[in-house]
Structure formats: structure tokens, C-alpha cells
Amino acid sequence: MSAVAPAAPLPAAPKPGPVVGPGGELPVVTNDVTFVEIETLRSREFLPAAKEALSAMLKEQGESKLIRPVFNWAGRNSLFPLHWGLACCAIEFAAAFGARWDAERFGVVPRSSPRQCDLLIVNGTVTWKVAHKLIALYEQMPEPKWVIAMGNCATGGGPFRTAYSVVPGVDKLVPVDVYIAGCPPRPEALLDGILRLEALIRERGE
Amino acid sequence: MESNPEDIRAQLTAAGAVGVLAVEPFDGAAARVKFAPESAAALFQVFRDALGFTHLSTVGGIDWVTRYEVFYLLWSDATKRYVILSADLDAKTPHIETASPTWPSANWHEREAWELVGIHFDHHPDLRHLLMPDGYQFHPLQRAFKLHEPEELEVKVRHV
Ligand code: SF4
Image: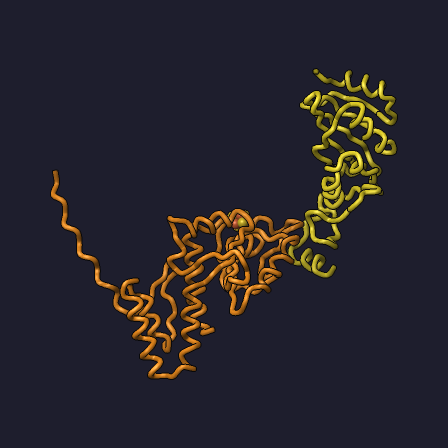
């Protein structure tokens, strides 16, 4: 019987620096560096560090300057997509929120009412018949809101592009922030898209 | 009770049905009954009341270029057999009497056959679009329908 190897010590928490998501390095906005540091921490260290950073910034910059970045930071880390499945891509959407891929660790929680959502993930074929409902759902969502076109169908009509009933790309109906290719995209690709959207929100500073 | 074309033909004669053009054998069904579209309404009643075909499974249409065909798939709970009714329609203005007073399930099936194939069902209670948005201008399962460039179709659908 071989000896049981001693458990390796836990690696130290990563040093603050550029955050590398699955899709590559995320852009860092300089005045936002405190939050980038916070995001690299582990959950146990998170709350004290956040509290410290916030009170430091509050002292330094005053309330009005702080509100916007705080809302941006909080919003992009708790994107609530609409729980809406359109076609086969919705299966991958569901898998991404299941135990194996666990999208909720990024703060992404599907909600069943558009009024509680700030992210519309269009996960499937959009027909002209459902187009009006999609626009109605989008318009019920409170600002600020974002749209991810998931899969080839939502991006450009996919295999049904020339069909008589299919909208060739959901960007004909609502503004799209992130496109995810694939038929269907794997759950990893959806997570990558969500992280890219988070980077986009940070970049825009909305 | 086994049911075959001869049975169907005998039952139709006994019920005094008019407008039957042919009763042919058909794989998987008791028979295929070709009928003249003018006698549709009376014939539907005969099939439901005298022959016991109480359930209408589907209504469909086919564009054969020189003519249209409309077909009805009926099911009998008593004999556990299907029968197919089929009528040839004029290629210019394909129309036939609705079956919805006889079988309420015909309502949606006829809406679908109308919007996809372009067969008009006279006296239909609610002939609206079913699968396409309101105001859609095409009957996409007609042979004359050309696949559109996406942009072209979008414009046409949007401007109604
Ligand atoms: S992109 Fe492919 S998997 Fe996704 S909805 Fe379209 S056909 Fe289905």
C-alpha cells in the first residue's frame, strides 16, 4: 500500500492584479481598482475587505462619487436573467444553472418576472409570432438592462435563417450587448458570455 | 369489428350519402374516400352520425400545382380505425365548407391549413392566423412561395 500523501497546503489567495476570466483578461478601469481587488478575494475574506474598502473610499471621495461605482459593482455581480426558454438552447441555459456548472456562483440568478430582471438571455429561435412578446418582456424590465443573444438562432437566425417564420437575429428587435456563437453553445460559453458582459458593464461604468 | 373499403362503401350507400367519388384502400386506414367539395357539409354529418367517426384528428392541405387537395383524418372509437377524406380543389380559388360545426377540433386545423397552404374554409367561425403573426401576407407552403432573403421578409412583416 502506498503511503497517503500529506494534503497539500491551500494555495495562498491570489495577489490583486488583472482578473483573468475564461475568455481572457478582463479590462480593468483604473478608478475601479479597489473592486477588482475585492473580486479576487475568497468568500471568507470578502465581507471585511469590502467593508474596509467602502469606508475608505467614502472618507476619501464623499458619498456622491461613490454611489455610481458601487451600483455598477453591485449590479454587474448580481445579474438577474429572465427565466425564459425559447428553444433547444434553453436546455444548455438550464444546465448552466444546474449543479455541474452552477452559474449562481457568479451571482446570476434567473427570475421569473421581467420586472425583477436586468438581463435578457435570448436562448433560442425567435419566430415572428413571438417577436412582439419578446419586445414586451424587454420593455417591462427596469433600467439598466442588458441582452445576451445565446446561440446561432438568436444571433442571426441560425439554421432557420431563410425560413418563412424566423427572425434573422434578435438584434432586429432589441439591442444586444453580447453574442454567443454555437448551436447550442456549451454552458461554459454561456458563463464566458456572462463574464464578458460583466466586463462590458465595468468598462461602460453604467 | 374489422372495417375496410367495402364496409365503408356499403355504410355510405345505406346512409344515402351523396358526393362520394371513390372509396379506395389506404395503408393504415380503413379507406380513403374521395368526395366532391360541394357536398362536404352533408358528408361530414354522415361520417360523424351514421358511420361513427366521432373524432377529427387532423386537417391538411397540399398544393399539387394544378390543383389543391384538402384531407381530413377521422377516427372511430367504435371500430378503432382511421378513415381519410380527401377532396380536390380548384387551383385558382381553393375553398371548401368548414368542418368545425361537425367536429369542433377542425377549428384550429383549418386555421393552420388556411395560413400555410392558402385553402379558404367558408363559414369558418374564426379564420385568423395561428402560427404566423397577424397581417402575415404569405401562404408559405404553397409551391409558388419563394424563400426570402431575411431582410426582405423582415421588411414585409414589419410594415403590416
Ligand atoms: S442555435 Fe441551435 S441549439 Fe440553439 S436554439 Fe438554435 S437550433 Fe437550437
